[in-house]
Image 1 (cartoon, rainbow, N blue to C red):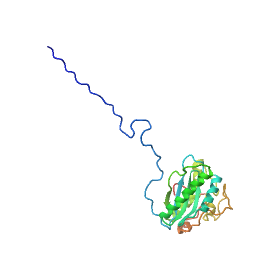
Image 2 (cartoon, rainbow, N blue to C red):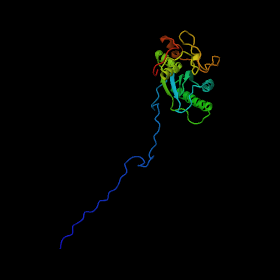
Image 3 (tube, helix red, strand yellow):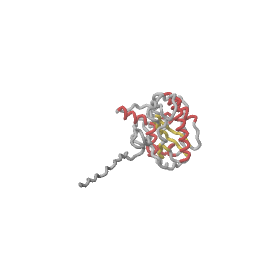
Image 4 (cartoon, rainbow, N blue to C red):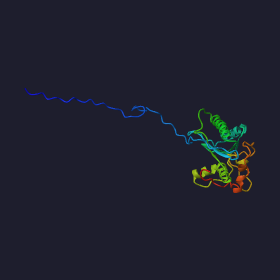
Length: 238
C-alpha cells in the first residue's frame, strides 16, 4: 500500500504595522510644535551697571506695527509704566518686532520688568488692532552690553534700526530722518549735537516716554568711541 505524502503545515503570516507614535493612522501621533527662536537656557547675569539690549517679536500674520496709531498708543503705554529697578531708556518699533535698551538692577528685576513690558506691549497691540489672543512669538531675547564699544553699537542698532531694514528691503540708501517709531527724539548723542530731520509721526512736541540713563556706560561711557551719525546704517546683530 503506497504511503501518503505528508503535507507541510501552512505558516500563518501576520502583518505588522510600522513602529512609531500613534500607528499608521493619518494625523495620529504627537503634534509638531513651533520651535522657539529663543533657546531655553539659563539667562546670564545682569550687572546693575550694564545696560541690556532686549528684543520682542510678534507672531506672523499680525498687522505691521509701524503705524501712527500703534506708535502713539505705545508711547503712552511706556509713560504709564513704572517698575522698581527697571528703566526703558531707548526703543524702536519695527513691523514685526521691537528693540529696547533697558537698565535693570539685576537679573530678577530685568525678568520682572520685561514681564510687565511684554504684557503691556501685547495688550497695546490687541487694543489698537481690535483683536484678542496671543501676540508675542517668543519670550524676550536679551544681551548684556558690558563695554563702551558694545553700548555704542547697540545704541546705533536700536535707534537706526529702520535704516538697516530699509536698506535690506529696498536695496538703496535710506533717507536721513529721525525715526518717529523710536526714542531718537530724546537721544542727545547725535553727531553734530542736533537730531536729524523729523520723520513721520515724530511728534516733536510730545511728552517724554522713556527714562534718562543712570548707568555710566549708557549715559557717558559710550561717547568715548564717538557720537552717532544719523546717516549710519547698522550692520548685523550688535
